[in-house]
Image (cartoon, rainbow, N blue to C red; front, side, top):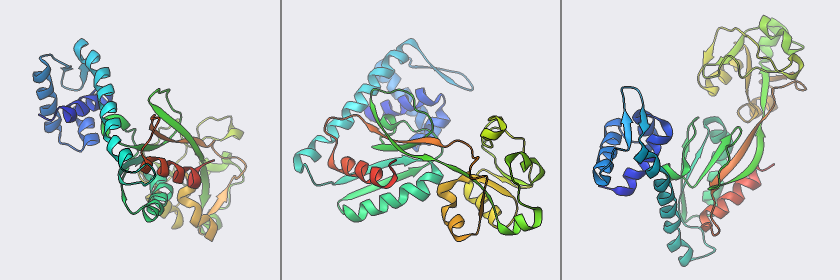
Length: 296
């Protein structure tokens, strides 16, 4: 049994509440997740999880073991950097594992990574893009870009980046055909392009309307921002999406911004990485690169 791997799987199951979710995070099958948990329980001689058909709950032994497992995984991560520090204190080398949200990662983080790779030829990077919260320690990531409020953590450093600004816009063809709305209150009379993952109480909020969510209708919705952008370019409706996704289209005039002084409030963005008095050069240089390119 790979004890460290089994511990990482257990922490992931405990954090996510199900084998299926942990399997996705750990890039394993649900069957393999179950095998790791069984082997770990046999090794410890104690039941760590109480299972039912839908969810797993920690037993008393599991709750006690969880915190110790977190500490052990963090200690292993720190130990792995010792050899790198001893080799060369100033020369970045080795592999970095980074996680970021899909849209921000594609349009803002990926260009930083490619420039970083050109500058440091002895570093390689795995960039995992997903719109979910990853556990840096349990999943072995060196750093993460996060959108939204953060919970307090003694184990992570959080560096603020430029806020995640949303833009409302439409194509010139749509506005010629349907007219240009002068305020958000006119949006219910228009065809709006909605994101399927947005809860009805989130997304389209404006200060001029007291921050209350707008109930909007439209003929097209998608779970992917790029598909919504494409629909807006083809004149299918009014779009609310991140500025980072739309910047080139706005600059080229393919999309026209609306309500520029009355937009949903921007969301905070942070770069997170494990707290370490002597981070390895590969991580230190990457943090510098991100802060230079995406910092406030």
